[in-house]
Length: 466
Image (cartoon, rainbow, N blue to C red; front, top):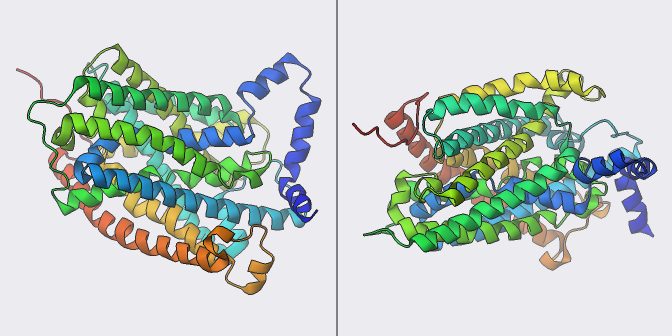
């Protein structure tokens, strides 16, 4: 009986929204809209998480394997996949706690999307809100930048008549159209298609590498340098740190309390894509990947590769929207237009958010190394350290633990086990992810700047033949 009561409180206005949807589902237009546009089920959340978790980074994981070596590459994927799922679970617990408290106070979220910084504000105060807002927005900003860089990097392998910088200009304009997608409810068909695209690309990379076989004189010397080792490890930390949009995805669900294990299930599926593809490409090309951060550059050009490039371009457009939509929400709230029902007004308000993303993608076009830098300096805090610390502080008092909506998992030994895992996560990511990873990725990033320069016209492009 108590659990039913909690579920009703948590579901809140989503129950009313489901009824509204049921009432209007008689027309064909409404049915089509519900099928392609208006998602909020457990399956929608799973597709969103799985589709968003691995995008362009799929193409850079073989590069990370060349830095780490095969064994370390596989182990780090499993380890960070599990750790990412854990902190996504913590974020979901804090969201449910915050929302339950607010809805008991009769707060209406019907035209308002809850975000991570608001969860921190409601549970822990303005200082936590400010820190969370800074890290989350900065990470999502550079996450969007990375998708734009990846678009230019990929299309170049189909059409090299234009340099990568020009392609960045073009795709920046294309990605700006995401301002017209209202919220994560409306990514239903895109999330599904996005996952189909990454699945095709991952298995294409795997099969193409095995058919191609090992290049003549292939070497697998990784790990050879500590700098490269921790750079590669931090790229994998970044790979499984895609849950900066967890709160927004949860809020788009009809029943957010069912989110708990969704991210873990999504991660398990993603591992079936990342492990075979990265291992196969590294096996085939070895140390050649150290100078080719995009694995598609080494695979032979044919119709299958061109299809993978095109599908990844579309997927990067989708992932750009995933990363940028929370930034749109923050900007709307700042300008006090978030709760307006005019889509055109909201879209016009959002456009200025795309401009700095466009500009940064042109300054730092270092596809691959930028992932590790963002991973160590931003992902480490945004989706690992801050959620673990926030969870520990939120439930520090006996009364908070007693009245918690979500109890500590008995499998871990209750609250003591949960706190032990959180302390380990904070310590590991702070020392290995931020400390060693930050040192290594910044050295590598500075090396790219000194080698290619800022605003470089065509990063890692082959030299023109005379």
